[in-house]
Image 1 (tube, rainbow, N blue to C red):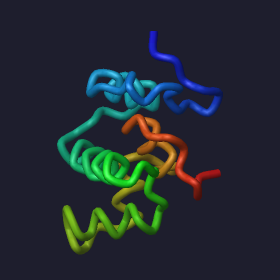
Image 2 (image 1 turned 90 degrees about the vertical axis):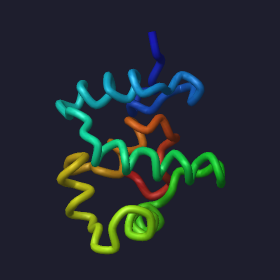
Image 3 (image 1 turned 30 degrees about the horizontal axis):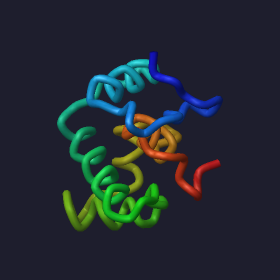
Length: 101
């Protein structure tokens, strides 16, 4: 069984896999589409390079640079729900971003 902390973040990042991501997403009533995976891969690459979960501002900048120049916070919320950054980090297996409540 994959352990998560009281806020729903993985206790051990090494436990993450696409199957774990699907399971976490399903617990949030989300079905991951290719658009979700594109976003997940962007934030995971950032974490791999810098060792940090990207803040909201950095996330949007990365998504605009790497996916679509018109990508917006509204699109992120449409994909991951009202607490998009938190849900994205949980599904992507990243630590809680510093700007999440």
